Image 1 (tube, rainbow, N blue to C red):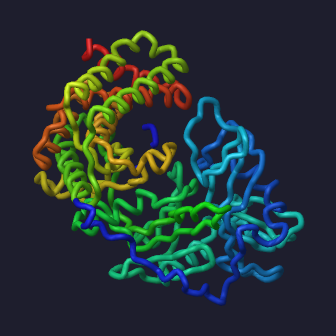
Image 2 (cartoon, rainbow, N blue to C red; image 1 turned 90 degrees about the vertical axis):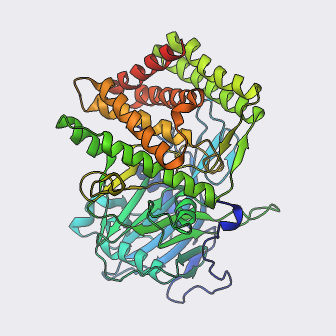
Image 3 (tube, rainbow, N blue to C red; image 1 turned 30 degrees about the vertical axis):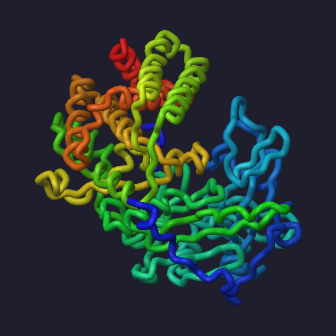
Length: 514
């Protein structure tokens, strides 16, 4: 699948850590400029290593330079001996702006036609790497403070990932870094770490099947929704989303006379749902066994509505009126035109698809309004976990659905991901996910299976929310069309063999409008 994310008075901010708390004396911190020669010595190594990482967003464009935002020694290194060092970096990778790119991301810095995304790097340093760490090699810097050391991806080293957990267990400040723990959370020590290998835009470490630490790789100023939303949901008593136990952030240095940028959210520690299975694999298993998935889908719709209702209680809401609805429809139309220019297969459907967006705009001009609130932002079967056996406990089975990964679509600017939106956008994402499962699972009648499953999901959502998304067909069709257009562009660029999956939906959606 494509990556494949209440009143204001009820929202409590994250637990504060005194900003004048001195850093521990056992580690050293560096100013934004870093130790003399640090970035100069690392730049040639990072220019080779960084574009090869799957979470690097600027693939296909050369890295023209680096700028250091902050450097912090979490564990000092030694020129000799077997104790590894751990260096935390925030680095801007400067690249040419991609054609047609209009949104800034990262630290907000540009150099003429160049854009710079900000990345979080955790570098280990040893005189030599033991054989198990050989695949994590980045290189050996020439000159600078790490001269003669072997630098490697620190998450591959259990000693260093254990140190990260210890920092989260004992909140406080370390230079620009702030480690925060929820007062009610109990985090044991000596939990064996292991790095998850199925990550895309971020990295995750599981500690003893008890906690999972999600480390954001491409970061920008402002609270990441994957911290903000689960915290707010936990404080409403919603148990459908694992509550953050601890997190850490960085305060970037002020530049010029302007205001200091907001802190970067760097990582979130949450309970690990051991033994759970994601909805994508469950759906494929049901398809392989020619089994029914409607009970699970209905329970998942119920769980989605519970989370939406809790977010509407915890965080500010708004109303979309004519100007906002027309803007929404225009943005969808613009994305369609851009995708059709890149994928000729979309051209025959443009008129009908534009008509779906025009129907939405016409309702806005006629005085129709819709509620908007914070949403998941990238909801699909892979973001839903079933713990236990069978269907959801509320639906008569022994399992229970949870939703994870509230970051939203990482390619979108953070401010856009934090903006209130119609909840139907999440629903459209899940409906498209059912279509994908039916196609990939090679069901004899994929559209029939998907239709039954989609209907069950909407019915479960209506049971919990009191409103059936199918009762607002123009809004649902516009969002589902927008999602399918995005999928066409994604598949054409990355998985051409899968292009027929969203194109089948495009054909159906265009015929519905006609």
